[in-house]
Image (cartoon, rainbow, N blue to C red; front, side, top):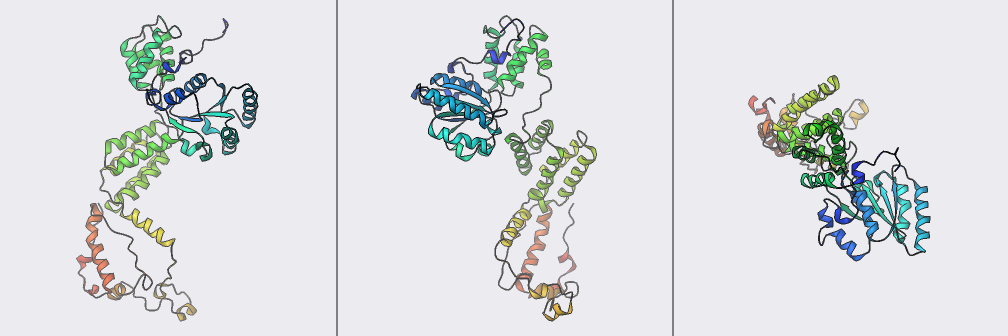
Length: 441
C-alpha cells in the first residue's frame, strides 16, 4: 500500500488468519465437528458452503486451503467462465507434478450455468481440483445434482448478536482494526442487533460510525448504518421462505405473524402485485367456501394495489391478510379440485347421451339430449337422471363444517341422498326451506 492507496475496509483487515480466529460456526468448527475432523485427517474433499452474506464463507475457504497446504485459486462466478476454469486446470496439472494439490474456490457458484458447472465435473471427479463453492442460494435448486453429489454441502449460519458483539470489541483493540477508537456499549449492542448476523456489515458500519463521532454513539451507528432493507433475495430462497411463512401464518389463523411476514416482503422490495396474487390464491385454497366473501376482499385488495401502487395500496394488502387470518378455514374446494384433476387425467368417461348438446336434427336422431329432465320443469326427474356414466362413481367434494360452508353442508347431505337414492325421496315434494342456503356474509 502506498501513501495514495486507501486502506482496506475494516472487515478485510480483520479477516481471521487462522481457523482458531473464526467467529461463529461452532457447529462446524467445534470439537468433534465436521470441519474439525476433516482438518485432523489432513484430507479435504470438495465442499459447498451455503450461508447468508458476511458469515465467513470466503475466509473459511482460504483458511482450509492453508491448513492442508494446498494452492488456492479464487474465482467469482459473476465474472469467470469456462476459459478461467481451463486456466485453473492447467495450473493444477503443473502443481500436481510438484506434489501440490489445488483448491479452486468459486464464489457465487449458483451464478454458473449448467454448462459451466458441468465443465468442472471431470476435474473434480479425478481429484485434480478440490472445489470449494460458496453460495447464498440453496444448492438444491442452484447447483447441478452431479456436482452436488461430488461435494459435501455445509450450512453456515448467521452470526448471533453475542458473536458479533465479541467481534466488534476485537475490532476496537486489534492493531489491524481501530485501536484507540472508543465506542459506547449501547452503540455496540445496537450494531450487533441490527447487523442481521452479517459480520462484514457490522464491521464496516462501525468504521463509518467512527468517522462521524467519537466515542461512537447509538446515533452515529444509526446514521452510518443507513436505511437497511430486510434480507430478501427477490428470486432466491429467502423470498420463497417469506411467502411460505405468510401463507402458513394465514392458514394457521395468526394475524400478527401474517402481518409481520407481509411487512418483511413489502419492506424487502417484493412486487406488491405478486403478493396480491398469492393472497387471492390463499382465499380460494385455505378459506374457500367457509367464507366466500374472502375472495371478493382479496380481489378488491389486488385492484387497490393496481390503482394506488405502493405504499398506499400496501394497506389494502394488510387488510386482506388480516381478514384471511381471521376467517374460518376450509380447503374442501382445493381438495375437490385436486381430486377432479386426478380423475380427469385417468380414464376418459363418456358423456351420457341425455346430457349432450343437440343443436341439429341429426344429433337429436342419434339420441343426443333425449330424456333430459330440466330441473325447473321436472325436479323429481332431474334428480333421478344420472350425471355421470353408468357405473362411474366419483366423490370429489366433501364440505368442511366451518363458517358458511358448515351452514351449507346440510343442503349438500340432502342433495347427495337424493342423487344416491335415484329420486326415491320425492324431491319434488321438498319444502322451499329445503332448497335455501344461507347467503354468505
